[in-house]
Length: 478
Image (cartoon, rainbow, N blue to C red; front, side):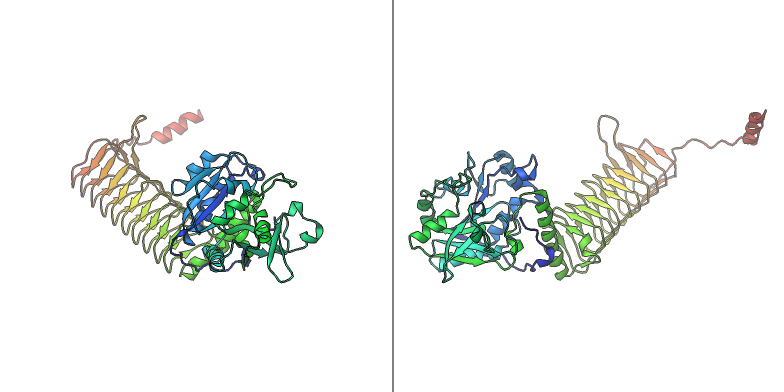
């Protein structure tokens, strides 16, 4: 397979097309994909926050194909579990080629009359607009089929499009079966088609496995249509990277680079500043507001939503989290966390699942927060751990404070009221409650509830023995 340069991308600005009930998609996801050298089926390998096949499924839906059917075979249960219940599944018990995979869908589509788009599950860069144009060409031209083709400098092992002298598509020849003259053709079959479903299945019954692979080629259907005088059109995709297939981890990395570049370009055109775009990794479902600045080395994954006017400092890692407007997040980690408007986090802090920070909170460096609600205006200094806790508004938590939430068997909760002051190096042994306005002296170990507005000291009395250190030194010298 050829390598594709991310620089060759066009910027995606397409809007989803209104779903059509007379259009459906058949996605081929039954192969073993041995060249990936993985326990995972190729269709479910992650790519920018989605399984590879889910990119194809979403493109079909955005192209207006309401009904989506996935052909599964190898590791079928894993594919179903990963892709979920939003699609239909049919099983190809034996992998006898793409034509055979399409045959397996005949019963599921026996009452379907319309255009059926057929796509491989390993082409995650395909754009909805290209699918929609191909389907529309098939419909408007009254064609038996419309092909999506592309021109490539190095067609490699793609099937070649053979045209008549007048430019009409005559047939497709698989590279493994092609003589040198055919291999010289640079227009390739992308394995993406639109078929008139009423004509497809009768043609499939005429396929033969008499080829080097001893498989039923879906490409041979085009030759059958042409032999019957049925019209076949070709829709040439302008950007060849759209039809890039994934068969190895190298090609998966190439596709990742292309898709990340698309994502970054879209976000920057929408008003996000990236100081070094190539160093920033953003997943496809991430949302980022205008005038937010992303510093180099950041990784933003999952369904993260970042508001406007935020500053995401260098080497931050944010996963499935929400950062509201005006947040400053410096060189820190957030996983399944919520950060309120105007809050500052880090550097080098960690927000674990269930961390919920209110507005205008200040989180210092090397702070870890887990499964806790931090209300507005709270300040939590460096080297602090807050777990399974609730901290009231405008409370100050001193450096080195720890909520001891685990007794070796169970987790317990700490509640700190509003306007309290917790001195540095305080240890709060949960379950414990600190009332509103309470003051805890630094270095305290708190094992009992502290009433509102009270002073709590939980440390040993300081003892001074004059001259003790001098006498110890003298004894050691004897």
